[in-house]
Amino acid sequence: MKKTIDEHAERFSEKAEEYDESKSPEYRACADLVVEHAAPDAGDTVLDLGCGTGAIALALAPDAGEQSSPSGRSQADHAERVIGRDISEGMLEQAERKAADRGLGGVEFDEGRFREPNVPDDADVDVVTTNFAMHHLSDAEKREAIDEVAALEPDRFVLGDVMFFDEPDPAEPFYSPEVDDPATVGVLSDALTDAGFALTAVEMVHEQVGVLAAERVPDADG
Image 1 (cartoon, rainbow, N blue to C red):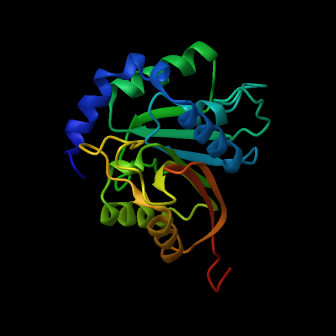
Image 2: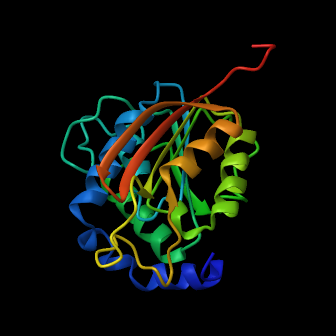
C-alpha cells in the first residue's frame, strides 16, 4: 500500500461530495457488471467492501423496486440484507444519505476494511462484492484480503477493479501511480483460485479495468 489506511480515508472523505460526478464511463460500466454478476437471491446477505458512496450496495438493497443499476439498466435481483463497509467517514455519510433519500431498508453502512471487514455476528454472508477499491493494496495485501473474504465462506465473490489485461501504456495510465497499485488479471485469478474460488467470468471493460466473478468451491464435505 503506497499510503496508509488513514491517508486513504482522509483523501476519499475530502472528495466524497463530488465523488459520484467524477466517475468515468469505465467505472460505471464496471459497477454495472459487478451488480449483474452479484445476482443475489431474495434471502441473501451481501457484503460490499470498499462501498464508497454506495453504488453497488444500494443497487442490491431490498425495497428498491425497479431501481436502476449504475448504467441505467433495471435490476430485478435484490438481497435481503446488504452490508456496506468503507474506511472513509465521508463516503459512508454519502451512502447513508442516499439510502435514506431512496427509502431503502435492509442496508447498513459502517467502517470496515478488506482484512478487517467488521461483519456483524448475526450475518451469514452469501455474496461479497467490491468495485474500484482493492487496487490500493499491494499484491501481497490483495492475497490477504481475498483470503479474508474466503474465510467468510460466501457462495460468490465479484471483484471489479483496475487490473491489467496487458502491459499498461505508461503514457496513459487508468490509475494514479503515486497512490494506486493495481495487479494483473493473472495475479488476481491465482489469488482467487488459491483461496478456494473458481472463476466463472472474466469481463474486460478496458485494458486496465475489469470484473472477475468467482464461486466458492465446496469442500469434500459439501
